[in-house]
Image 1 (cartoon, rainbow, N blue to C red):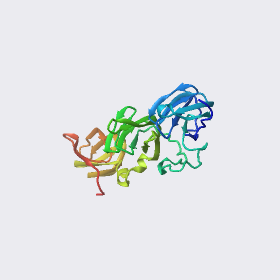
Image 2 (image 1 turned 30 degrees about the vertical axis):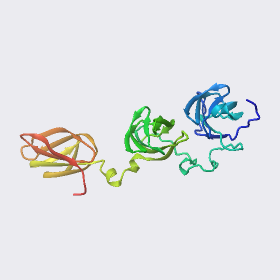
Image 3 (image 1 turned 120 degrees about the horizontal axis):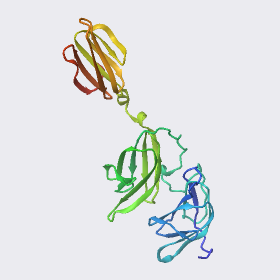
Image 4 (image 1 turned 180 degrees about the horizontal axis):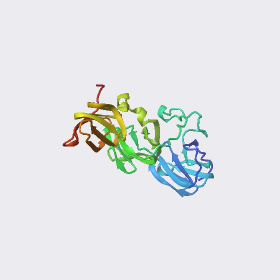
Length: 306
């Protein structure tokens, strides 16, 4: 292809500051149906207007693009930076290089504008991911379906932190709408947007614990009510709780998990022990007697303040 076919517009978006350890993942997007060859090599067609090339060596490489009936669209050289991923756009009649933090091309939706990087999460806890489409869609995250919230929204729970593959398809012929990889932080609630250009973008992130309503965060501990048939002293995990010679005692702010519960009856001096499994945000009712020991008589979700 002759160089008289200039590259209509070449925009590079560095999606991650990491170095290309295993080569650069380059994605080339056209404004119409196209075929793209990068440095003489064929890539993988993501959709009609997007091609993906993996393991590309950084440096000056030639991009050739043709449209319907092999009509030349572009032919020029571009410098691929030493980063993890790079996006190349073939758009208008001039060459534009977009650096991180600069303005994007006119017409870019607000959710696709570059945002300051969110501090990296060190949490290993699972996350919740909500994927939104622009049209009716079916979404797979790492090849698995989630919960459909509506025709354009899917929710995925217990998502392991790390790089996750997100793919959306839909329409009459169930054509692929978008596919890409998103770095999901641990212990977070994230929103991922897929668009008709094949892009996948993480648009919102918040701490999963902070996203819960105040009443939900307050209900992580539990309460244990102990009723003795005779005056007693109650100990949990080796520590005395409440007063001696009581018959009814409420233990507040008990963390979820297993706890050692001991009841020492004042009259007779008999000691009863048991291991109590306490779920988060619940009330447990325990009856203690010399004859039958410790018995959980009722368990219910913790609501309100007594």
